[in-house]
Image (cartoon, rainbow, N blue to C red):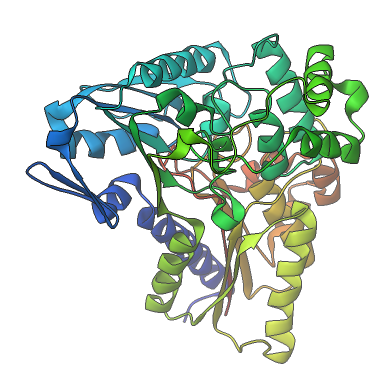
Length: 447
């Protein structure tokens, strides 16, 4: 007979196994192979077929945490037909390529390497002619990894505004809206640079709803946002007085119509562009569902579009799990509850952590005493905030165990210091870089 502690450990192991199954399903290599095939001169991308004999040169560009892994598979398919390429990736997210240059850069705060890589990408796109094919590889993190400030702005300006937006709890949609209007490459500007070449984007989505103009700030698609939207976001969070003067000036000048808007639908830049999403959050969730069922847990998918303040979302998930225990609704245990999306953290403390670790801590407080509930929250990219952990796992006994170690959960939550809460208990999840990114995956097991 298994003891209660052994049962808890098994549930944690199962939760991790389910989480990793979700990550494997959206591995870049698997995604590229699923959607991209070549037979001689014919390249099939999704439902479209391209005759490679019609193109003089093929260039590969792009950015994101999965960029290097995607580039490996594209090289395997196209080989020496690739004339050149540049991909900007997060530090450490590397893979061995031969014909495509990999530039390591900063994320989530952009750095000089990212600016340099983005410059290489823009110039390569500008060199393409009507007889060329440009393949753009886009994945999560691409926006921060391809920072190319608009005229009159510096990288320091962009770093400061990125930090301000992250700190105030702005969503990725809001952050990217502003990024697009401060950039030479985002918001359809890369498509404008590559025109009149044929441009195909292969995309791993890391945004809720898979909006093409939000993923990596939409470098190759029409931009539906405006300077007016930027000012609405700035005013909504009350951060105008904190903006660098150059940023505030550009947004105001753009609002007055003195700076051209980003290219919109119908712009000639998009006449020969094509976009194909090859991986998304729901793919990871569906794979996790299959893994849970194989382990004997009937699975319930809540949503792949969870947003909002992390600790609030955590308590809602905890309440659902407690309802399952108390009333058997919406399903009776055993049960695996799955969700995805991307929440936000309003930073008020000076601790170390990320939205997934904070989710696990807030959930642990909500399910305290319910020893048949286990909660895991992790980033599919393997990194959560500025830490080496993907997330954390907790259960109904976590708070009691923490108390025995002298750890006060409320203090750590208030200080945004979930990393140092979970570290001494061995409940951080450390996968290392996964070379993919389709937002977050949450696994709740009720036995």
